[in-house]
Length: 203
Image (cartoon, rainbow, N blue to C red; front, side, top):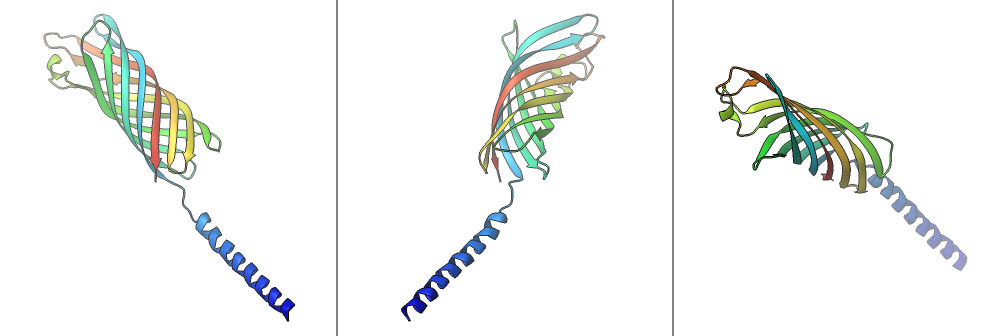
């Protein structure tokens, strides 16, 4: 009789453990990967701006960039990003800083799997050179289109958090303009390279 009771209790305990384990598996397996994220990043670097008219003038500059990024992670792992960007450009031999403001549309391609992964990326953007309208015949701030190339490392310490270290090369081709008081058309191009760090929250 005592042996029968022990067997019954043991069977009940094993049954309860089995039900508990089965119940937990779907809950864990059903957890969806985080597809969307918000990121804030900083970039520091240097470059040059070239003005090409009757003669060519090149000015060196130091740059600092900040970006607020909204992203989506596809099932393949590719990231699609919309970044709101502000770039401060400090030209040599001048006392004032200029601002390039605009947005980028980038794609990032992680390589391999794991918590730490390298990535490559590319994209394009649209920018305004702020407070330059009074310099040109048309009275409008200088506008341009950028090409962006980037690479670095992604680190995921937590399913909701990802950190990024990398580098970016950006070139902006500005529209052709005429300075006030001149009939010469000026073609302008800015290019710069910088190191960047960013943190994102995924949801």
